[in-house]
Length: 202
Image (cartoon, rainbow, N blue to C red):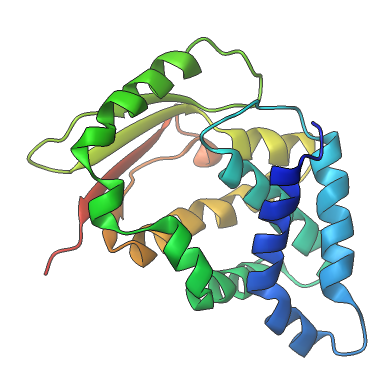
């Protein structure tokens, strides 16, 4: 895919969340720059997903792959590093928003349009999703029948990293003040990923 301005901005955004920890762990190396260079190379190799609603997740996967290739740390260590960076980033919290904004029912029409578009399967690596209406058990549901993160990691020969990126879904839900329940994922051999979001119990 093309390394667009948006790709660069997301890369800078994720890098800023990890910069402090990377500089602390690798004081005599310019590790943030090394990760950024590898991130750009991965993005340029990646198959395009167009103007996907989940471009941010696709690029986060690219950044995490780059982090693993550059630091030489075990994947669990890189996961913890990235997790801490995202939790500590005030900007990331602001960009994500909160449960009220994410679960706003007025956004459902746009989500249904996204569902329809995803089933056209225009891009090989983009997600295919069914959007589920609110029930007594959850406020918003998604069934993902294809996952761009899985596709990218598979293309890059590091499918074992997907499990860590799956765990970040719970981190993001927590930051937004939501509860995520999931019983299966494509990464673990499931036929689809079932995301069920609810507001946190008070």
